[in-house]
Image (tube, rainbow, N blue to C red; front, side):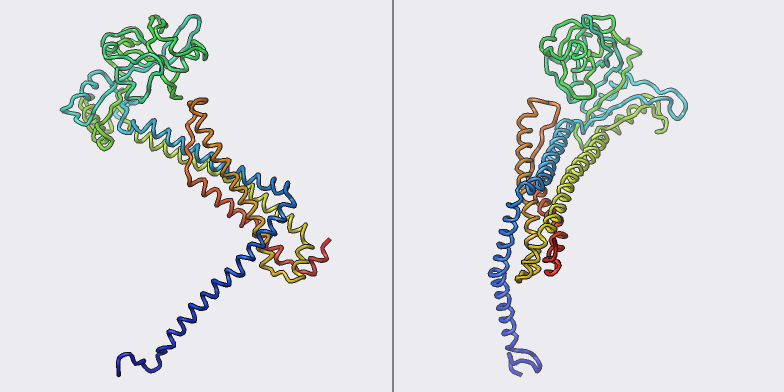
Length: 446
């Protein structure tokens, strides 16, 4: 058999003709869409716009729910992103730190837990036994009566070292922090928290005015050296050098410390540093079994993970609240579209009687619903972006404690697309109901 000769029963050349016919049919389909579907959609949109223009107030009130819902989604998501970014910026530096505290109550073997002491701190700072521990910061915690003139306050007392501020990721807004000489020399200097300042001096005084003023802690007079920035957690506090706390306020008590904060050389070596600290304290406290340990080591990574989970839940809650407002707006659109179908029953009957197709009626009412929600979504997106940008420009100056919202394109696009989807869903049933009306029954409607 010669090459190229069709096999018996094979289509041979006609296969090319079939392909050409398919291409031609596809071309005709595209041309039909261009010549029929586009004008039909243009006509439906024009009829929908004309109908909405005849009921401007109703259309405006209907779209208000969509506007508020879309704007709420954008603003609340931006606020949630700002909270997360602010949290990451504040606490990411703590991801390579851990806190060592004395166990509460009695340990499993029945004996009282041994307190943390300066000897433990010295052992933790030994580079031979703890090469992955970069810094250690012991602290004494308690309560003290603070007196300034006629004002008196019960505040939290912290006896700290020179690296405490850096380890706790805090800063002073007025004055200075303790130097190494302040700590070694038992200087009677004090740094106040923001709440302590307000309770003792009122909210009108400037922190800079307090630097150098005398203040009484228990029975001893100290000099205010600085004021801490607010962190929302430990603001009703007074901080003094650790040696001064022992000398004038709480006593030495055998070199006891309330807690020890350690920092590893990097985030990757945190668990290694914790293992080194555990081994050292086991030796210092004569611990033979892990169940007999009289101390706890808590890493900030665990606390950060718990806080991140809380932020995730809070973000989901915020989005759910905004979604509820969008749902309410969609219910409003569906209600108005049903009312519109009822009011225009005779009009629908007349249009069908003169030859309007079911699909034309369906397109018109769907177009009305999508135009309502599309306009509402566009206006809501513009409003949400404007509010977010305005808040980002003004909140840092007006309310420094509130995180700055962070605007991103994703929530804006998604909120607008959801508004269009709501138009299709909310207008679907009313449009189908209008399209299925029989001309005779529609013309009889009063």
